[in-house]
Length: 253
Ligand code: CIR
Image 1 (cartoon, rainbow, N blue to C red):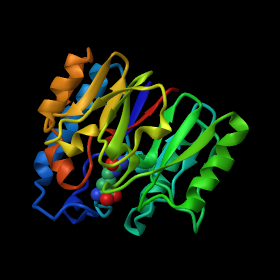
Image 2 (image 1 turned 135 degrees about the vertical axis):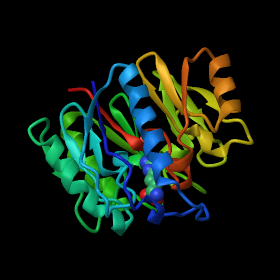
Image 3 (image 1 turned 60 degrees about the vertical axis):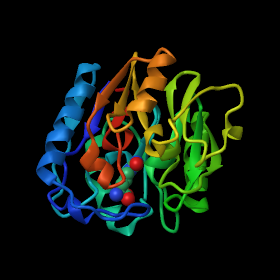
Image 4 (image 1 turned 120 degrees about the vertical axis):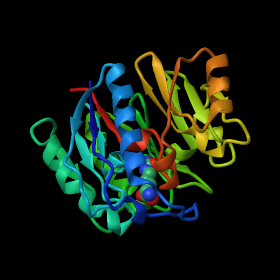
């Protein structure tokens, strides 16, 4: 397993913001946090593949949004924020030769942060970033490989995975204010602590769950449900509306 990552951009303070007011970002601290995050992934068995930094692309640390990687194919995204579209080229290059790839084309938009895979089904957030055309293009690209796309309405958050993430084969970590459970009958749920709306974003790797240290009450809930949680401080990334899943693309080689 390898993790595609990219260092924090020197221009991160100019990141896109949708639901948060701008607060000063300490790029040096963000870089330090990102290195610890990468170490956490390495400690869980991921080989790190680091892309070159992109000093002029403020949100480029959030590589998750640029691509959806399946065993059979990589779907290069077309991020909903125009300022982020130039991030895709270097990701495409890094994946060349590892997977056949297809691209989401205009007028479609798709952010990887909206794509939650559970087995052969990809749940895709109908968010401000991923439009109907992008979701249809994704469905058409992966249907030949036996995957189904299920669009999911979200409200009040940036991406589907701001609202819900998979933490085991049958358990979802969820903020019920931002998404309905109806898309996932039969799953088990851990709900975020009410005072931690941003804590539904967790990255499940092997026998552990990587989770932002800004969500201690939610971490308690995960641990009480039997999960091993690796808490990492991503507070500077959180000021840019990012969290733990967005800073990597985990690929099964
Ligand atoms: C953006 O608005 O695109 C960035 N500031 C944050 C992206 C976070 N990505 C993610 O959660 N997948």
